[in-house]
Length: 397
Ligand code: SF4
Image (tube, rainbow, N blue to C red; front, side, top):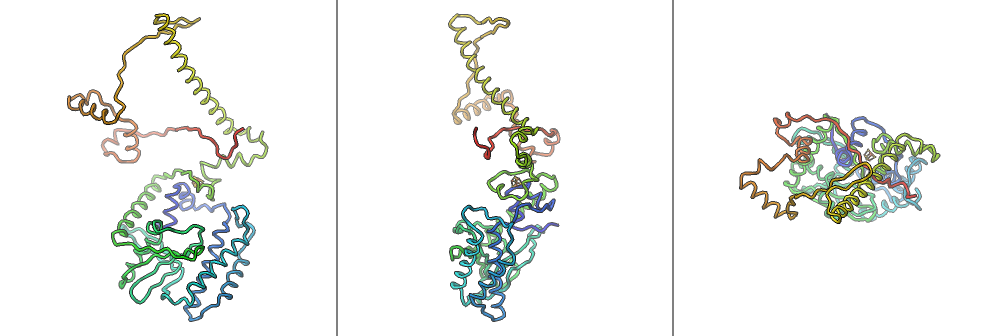
């Protein structure tokens, strides 16, 4: 049975296909480690050392701690670490991390505000449906009044506001673990050390909120398990795709990477996929132009037939009949539409005039929201929907 975690279920929420590649197919991401992640790791291990030494009644000096940080930076750094932001270098990030540690040190020295229970805590908890949830806490501490503290170090460049802290799933799930494990719990405080701002964001959850969170998490796990059973992991294109390490295996980007690899423009134009899409898009544009032209011709033919008082207009090889007819116009206003429908029902004519709503029925059947007996009467087959959109990375000619 899989053990779920905040990052695992978040991956599914962000993109089911990335989830499949990462957690089911266990594909290694191609992207190099980013400098933000690298700096975060160095800061985390430095603060871990600070509290580890403190456990043995050794107060490590700021200078020693910074040396530890710098030495590890040197040892672990490699040239393939990715610095994406323009005008910034790895050295800028090293200095940022150093400043985070200095500020933290000055703010919390002598580090005896709380009793440290564990660092980089790793555990599992069983949710009420039997699912396993991975627990990993940067710093887990308590005071002597039964207050427990689940602390997370954040090196992000944006401050977590209260609303964000109060809706965070990761630490809140650990509240459930704490309450289950320690019977003297009076409160569980969720603390984010926002190191870039030298501030804390704090949140606490009520029993009711935790129950709701656990239920929602279990529902999400069910959704993941259904997707796994049906091997149904669609791609989800968002801004996060720029940072995805699985692009070359993603059906939504694989072809783009193939044609990008063709250096010469003429090579790229020779690609079969490029040729097909170009032809398809040209045809669609022509079709739209023809439809507009047809509409205009229709109006002109009606005007012509009216002017001449005829109902057939003759061409060289074809003739066109222009016949006027009565068509009904339903009310556009939704209240009026509603009233009309009620009236039809009242008059006992609904059966005669209403018809099956295909889009609604189709959506319910596909989602599995329809009675089994009805579902069994309908078969599902595969079809394709093609839609064209502009490539954002290509400049207009
Ligand atoms: S590139 Fe985007 S759509 Fe493709 S797997 Fe990654 S996140 Fe999903």
